[in-house]
Image 1 (cartoon, rainbow, N blue to C red):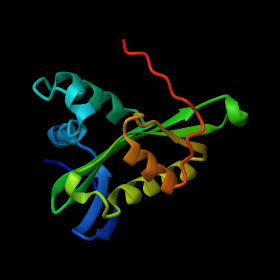
Image 2: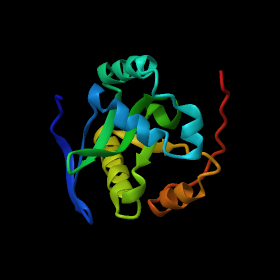
Image 3: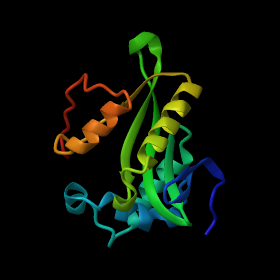
Image 4: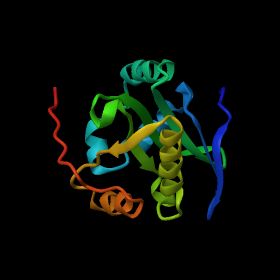
Length: 163
């Protein structure tokens, strides 16, 4: 499988953790991570890869989107998507959106998630973004505490409409 060079490398309790751009061959591992909780288990269906492959292709060719995986000992153990959005508010500034953050259960608490989010924040700064935003389901109270420790503030009420 073709892989991309490391975007970031750090030593964690379990070894050397590397972030890199995802490749299509990572999809099964990414889907396992996305489905590894009550909410994701009900939403994801890895039996049909076609819609995931189409979404991957759209993300992969658009320079405003980046799908990232984290590897430890050659295994995909984390993922997130980073997107850059132009806007008129805040004097026409760009913002960065972090989506679908997942870390393998066995690695939680070792700093992997904080490394990923800090890397994403640094990328947003480099791209000239004035704001980094993310959403997390109301039921994920542990995730809320995690993001608050990293400086995020629950300043808005998010709303979604399933189509």
